[in-house]
Image 1 (cartoon, helix red, strand yellow):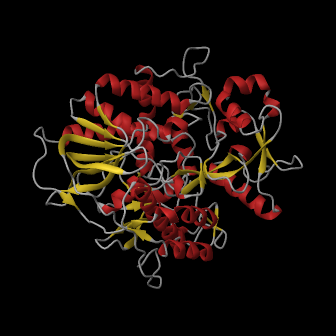
Image 2: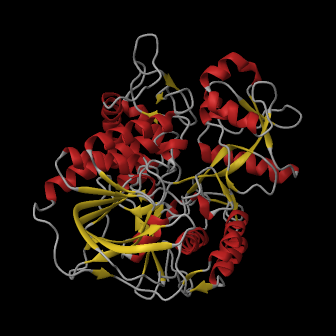
Length: 563
């Protein structure tokens, strides 16, 4: 394949597996199927239902059990008297390191306050200031206090509670414990539904069936669990991204995985979902120090401990590499136990349950996989390159986040995109129920063997972490190419196949980008290169071979995004 602004030597395309699909034993119709039940999926379904559309929500776990409920910090919006939209736009563009879409950023910033107001109208109990308006705090990369929060550090949980309650009141049908296997296509190639299956308590798949619909909206979250350890919950295995690729859509910016700088360090063998210590703790005054008490971020960036996340994580990673240490320390003791109990009760409790007391001692932290800035290539209305397939929230790559997400822009983006997506669908979809023949685009014979998933996670963490090299990424690609296959399909195999798919795209993209930009840091290519201010987009063909192309940014993008 040929990637980048300069021609490179041809490389044999990587191959990703397609699922061996079970036969459908039932068939139903709806206007829209929404896959996922985080903030983006719930708001999409709620808005569609309010417009009178028939909508079904499919979620492989319990309703609302995705990443949103784990969010601590809050939602970014211009609400303060000393703030304005231009500042929020510029902060977002600066964090995005030249790969943001300025038009998408402007839309997000303009519509964020209305999204917050809607949450309040739906009954969200936000933390309020003395004037009765939402209390605001600051996080890394923000030049003003503009982070709305709830329950101190339980913002995501409150958003989830609010939207789940509203969805129930609206009578929206939800299929819990149901996994989306593959898109169904009409004769013209458009997506016209999903093949799904129920998940038993033991992880077996049963009762496969077809959900026919005019449109499918993916809101499945990110792919943090492609790593051995991440802050995201167990179900974030990249299912939606893998499904979109198999459906013919492009994905982009997959190499831009954001590592949160303050994940509680619990030893070198820690695996699965890890304890996050919100950036808001540093926003309130906590600092990163080494074992001797020296400030880690002093002199590294003008904003010091509140620099954008990619800068803080890269600085910490470089410090650890230089010293041989495996963690730094987060010191919040000067904030006082009373303040920490009131402002961050959940974080304080989680640290104490792990054997550390944030109020009494500096606690060990290290960067950990946290958020995926890339995803299914889409606009802020959710439109992808495949008719009938839409994507909103973390699963989508809209250009809002660019090469690095600005803190607390994620749930805000999910809500804004969800409302826009629902409005688009309501205006465009026919009133008649869907009909006509449908079938999956591809049908495989083997999935990735779940027994290999742990090795994939270890290799991805080792070679596609905060600091990367061409040699390490090539080794990761070799591990992925040698992954064994299985003809058996259960939930573990679906998730292993998704993890294998996203790790393959991640390794390919990170190897193809010979520079350091935003979340993507190459130890063997430490500087950014102007000719690489481009987006890498990927698709797979009918045989599962991966192909990559560059998407040049416009002159306006390059001027505004590099500011």
